[in-house]
Image 1 (cartoon, rainbow, N blue to C red):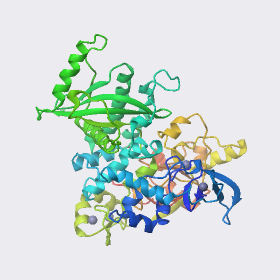
Image 2 (cartoon, helix red, strand yellow):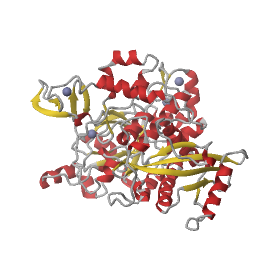
Image 3 (cartoon, rainbow, N blue to C red):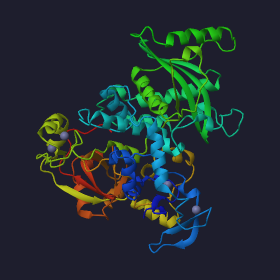
Image 4 (cartoon, helix red, strand yellow):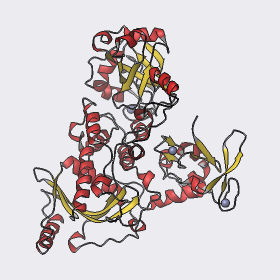
Amino acid sequence: MAKIAVVNDFVFCLTHGSEVCNKCYFDHRTTNNQRMKKQLSKAFPKLSEQDLLDRPPLSNALVLALDSGKKDPSGLILYQCRLHNTTNCKTCFDWINLAIANLKKASTRGNVIAIEATREEKLGFLSSMGVELSPNTRLPEEAVDKRLRGAIDGAQYFYSVIDEVPVNPASFPMWSKTDPENKPLVLAVRRGNFAEVTAMLKARGENPFPLYQNAFMDVRQTLMTLGKHFDDGHPEAVLQDKGHDYAICMRVLEVRKVALDVPMFVVTYGRGAHNQPLSPTFGWISDVIARSQSNSTKIGFPQIISTPEEQNLLLSILQVNSKRLSADYVPDLRKTEKRFMVSFFLPIGPLSQLDIGKLANCSGCIVCGNKTISKCSGCLSVEYCGRDCQKLHWKEHKPMCVSLKGGTWHTVTVSTEAPEIRIASLLEGKPLVANYLNNQNPFHPSAYKSKTEVQSADPTSLPPNIHGDRPFLVKIQCPFNPVLRSLGGSMLIYDRQRSFHAHFSAADDQATYDEAMKQPGMATQLKIYRWAKRVGDCQLSICFDRPPSKDPLW
Ligand SMILES: [Zn+2]
Ligand SMILES: [Zn+2]
Ligand SMILES: [Zn+2]
Ligand SMILES: [Zn+2]
């Protein structure tokens, strides 16, 4: 049962009041756009349906609303406005005009934000953030850019922390060091645990973009370093690769407090490259050195080692944000910064599964996203728009195709909780474990803040489908305990991205359980890898009799 609130015909998260909820994995813009289809297409005749789905979401809907104590015929709470005490008030809950105004504001600064990176770089950045598209994808450039912008927003939890674009940093209070509520910036900018993320990245096995594997991690590390330096009284930094080929010169102009534990670093920056001797960074560096010599407390400025890939990802992030700065914001720049850009960054953490699912899922042809007309006749699992795309994809698809040919698919109903735990929690009268991997991205701010709280586990809910209808590999582990094994105890099933952890026990389906148990590898290694498809919220279709050509490394 979805936890939704309907206010004046628009759907919001009941718990958090927002149209898009990263905490509950809801995106109600699809539903709500249906309710204003005509108005949207009239106001934005040039925008595609997808553009409209990407509009800035409505937030804080329930701040203005009061539970009227009444319910509608379908049992949903009826809300009235605080101002006029009117149920579903057309004035206070004027969502259509609000949504249109927000989208207009967002588009005045140039709706299309070009990112100056090569296509391979962009795909590599996406992969480093967990959004894996084929290296051969023929998705048009705009579509790749749009996904990268979406991933950058997701990593900054942009719409969870910023209500409106354009943003004027001056509208937020300064981040005061003396306020005991504010952590040192090095800690405030941190999101998630690096050891965990490193383990996750390692677990991903072969990566088609090895160069970019860590660009995302590196950027996050660098933001912490910049926070540390700012804490120590150094607003300037030079990010440079070991070969000194590329550099970003950056000065933190100010740090504003967007929310608790969410600092906004407003920066000015310029890029230098070995093949651009006239770059504005040279003058800037000599100026900074001269300033530091006249001020004995701050000698020099910090240098941060940063690969060219990391620098490009950071520049992409800054570029996306720079277009969202309000024209009313006038920063105080030095003479040597006249040719610099101004932008801001927010803390960055891993994307939510909802974001990954949305950004990685190409409907249509697996290569180009166009309408499909044919299926691979070998495995019947992948669809194409025609021969060209199929040919282009063959090298990548072959190992999967060959191993799937002629296999039998079994539909398995899984649960997010092991039955052993379900029973134990019933006995205890409360959920025993934090249902961490399923309902919460452990790195998302919501989890990060409430790490000590035990989340109640909902055994019937699986997280959003990040794989679409395409096959992906799952690891199936049988119970380590031989007694549990002989009793048909639950197997653990999960994918490489750990987008879900599911359990399957003999009690759920004895015949399929036996089929899984008899696979070679189960007896010796207690685990097997198999191709699976998500066929329902709690249903996986698994091809047990066709192992992959070689076992992956996770
Ligand atoms: Zn929510
Ligand atoms: Zn009202
Ligand atoms: Zn195609
Ligand atoms: Zn095939």
